[in-house]
Length: 193
Image (tube, rainbow, N blue to C red; front, side, top):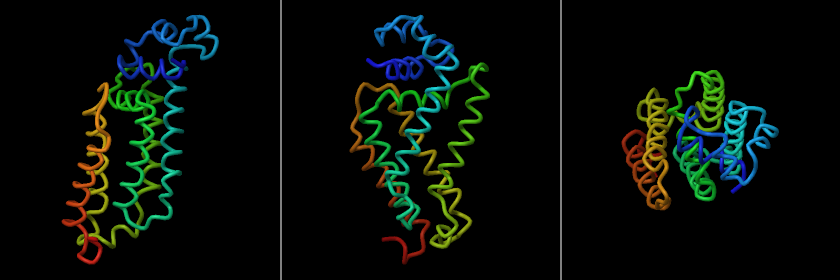
């Protein structure tokens, strides 16, 4: 197991406080001293993982070609499919990201606040656009529906956090059904597809 996967798995499973650098080193088949040589401290390793995951998510959004999609729901589905494919290949990344939402350690709180603000801003800029509101029966519903979709996606991730395996296809089918319901109930008839 690579250092990266070992660290993602350990922090994802135990959180910042309970994660052990020694356990990460053992899983990665390197010495604890090497861990500190590479990263300096447990906190710096954790922050490195935060930045790594941020980069993974940004690359997913870029690969989904969201700029070419003119519909809010289509952009969300495209990015969700790309995320699911990526997390299927990197399950420890998903485990780590979902653990970050629950992290309460004051030692990494500042880094989490900054990263969360940056991630939310990036996501909102990539997905929600002003013209999306025009498709809604009530344009002021666009932002709350977007927030609802984000909470729904986070709920799926939290439900399967730490699961040895789960059916990504079934999760996506369920998510797509929910999006179809939202589209039907909130969009003007001509945009309901």
